[in-house]
Length: 222
Image (cartoon, rainbow, N blue to C red; front, side, top):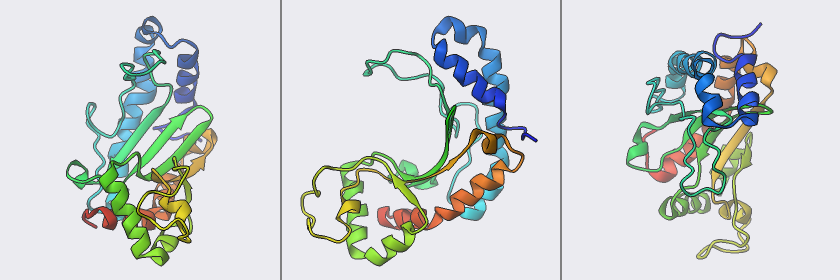
């Protein structure tokens, strides 16, 4: 059985959008987007809020239609060679409420044909935040290992050790990271299953030690 939030119709919509990524097609199918993607995912955010609060009272599940957890489908093409106007996936963000003041970590859910995953951490942080996290790894290498022991880490890395850090450090591969993120992947069938909210919550729980480490590193509230 499928759930009432994520259904095969969502993935079908994005597969068709990828083949017809233009304003005319989208305008003709906007009601489909609202009915199969936007409205169900906003309901998912609202219903996930109690589970999120059990992970941390400082994480936010914002179900507002604009400016909330659901990323806009419209692409920012100003500085991109790819001028297709629409994203061919849906994304939900569950940020730390301190995110406006510090580059605090958060959770993320990505829904794309052939690529469904939960994520957590800090993506593309500014230089000062990179240094905070790297310094925290150097100060507490055992804590970093514990925090990442059950995680699949991803993101971009430097080709060489960052300046100011020991190139022979045993965790130099982590010090080279430009993103401090982890992922947990799902199939489309799992995403559409009636138990998916629990699966997503369990993935977030597994990644919680990494979230805690990063939250402490940047000075946000735990």
